[in-house]
Image (cartoon, rainbow, N blue to C red):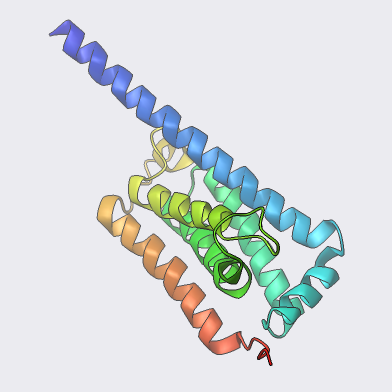
Length: 179
């Protein structure tokens, strides 16, 4: 009986550790993405021009929307706060990136133009975090903020993330036609 109880505690701690690692890793990646779009390279103006070249117009608006979503989702994931909504931010921004830029370049990231393996991995990670939740080592858990979990949380992540991406693309994405 004591062995079974200690194994159950170990299993729960292992799950919480895994969720913490996944949340923080994806959160830091998203924070870096948002920061890079705003402050590095061509800064937000360059990001806006790049987005416009992909057919996302007005480019500067979408640069700000994507960058602030990445920063917000990243911070919330690191903290483990409003996890399904944060995960939806990852899913949404990476789905738009997948469709507007990466899908046409094949699978591997090292291909010219960058393939979709990286953004695909982030989309799946976001969906998984939405389904699993933040774990016990999170602000959601510390604040006893268990407003949604399991399939309901997954549904929020998928509908808000994928639905938001689809709506944004339908309304704003106008790629240039290739001759």
